[in-house]
Length: 432
Length: 133
Image (cartoon, rainbow over all chains, first blue to last red; front, top):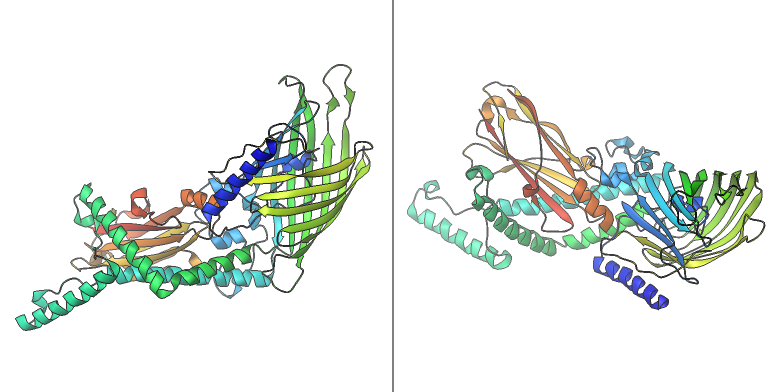
């Protein structure tokens, strides 16, 4: 039954993708929210937040136990919720301006705008409920000069396409009306011009449909409903004309090719990026609200360097090298009674990770050394395979800090949900 | 549609259009002189400006009475992911600013009825202004 439910959930995601059929701004992987990473519940501790979804639901479920949505995180990027007067595709990408020769001066702090906040719910096997909140941002990002130049060229090509669309609209708008008798000296001249105009209009309307002239709101009394009717009729006729002109002109082919090219450019990984995250969690025992205490607080940073595995800049194959720093303070005790034993610790993690990233598959190894009140290490191999755009199969195997129960053997499905029609009903399990 | 007051001075009236969006945008301004049969193209936004037009002269106060201006902005959301596209539509901001008339600066925003949303991947926003004494 559980397998069937998972398959149905996968199908629902796949179907919503299939219905969409559009090119995304960001062919992104599902993010691991800081709120998850704080609790060591993420398949990989060292990774970059490649996503800036307006709203993301991050579920980690493995397929060995039962339980419903035991690990769930929600991440929100405020940038997408607020109106900005100065925002443009270039500014979002990381260019200060597209003007002049020095237009390729990048703004390495542009991604700060896409800072996100998250909250997570994790229920462990001993009925301890963890509620976490977190925030993260890419505080520095250095892009290749070629990527910046390619981006600018793509934006300009899109501007040319929009200008061409405006020209199609003008063609329709400027269609000559019936000749005016007063413009002609003789009746014969007028009749000749009128006949030519009628022939041309008939040919035009046979191809593009009936001509409707644009209504001007100043020619109607205020609030006249006829204006809205005439405008709707004009919009229908104009859009039909523009669509046919685009078809005749080969516009759509160029438009789709440009969108694909743009998508490839913006998905190229930067040479260097520095991410910063902070998270805090509160623990609740025995399903009782009052039995709670401070859990973990963490602040961490990832420095990522990426290089192409081959010379094609549009290849999604990379070698990624990460350096990782984390300060972790765990204030929890085992239980909330007088006899509770203290598990408090401060820890300082320092780690590195190497990762080979191919189109759908990535394989990596991460090593973290923990010092401070607790000493230990996390040595984990990770593998991730993209099933669909928002669905990943993830696996981790290795040692996870503790002296005992230190085996990380996590195999599961990771979902990223950002479509209004997507829904998930998964009967699944704890990741550990 | 809005009206903007002009007088008989030689002071120049300027129009600015400020577009704030993560989608691609392009703006074209048309002008129709009083009594003329149709609008004629006046200016386009620059490639680098993503639909924004810096303050530009429309004409002197004295010659503008009865003239009309139409501002058409095309916004293309197709490069955005479905999630970002919907947010970009909600957060699209266009400010139309007129200055130089006897009443000074005036700014306007577009309203929903001025947007043609027929194409789910693009908007066409058309704003009309008339100069009156």
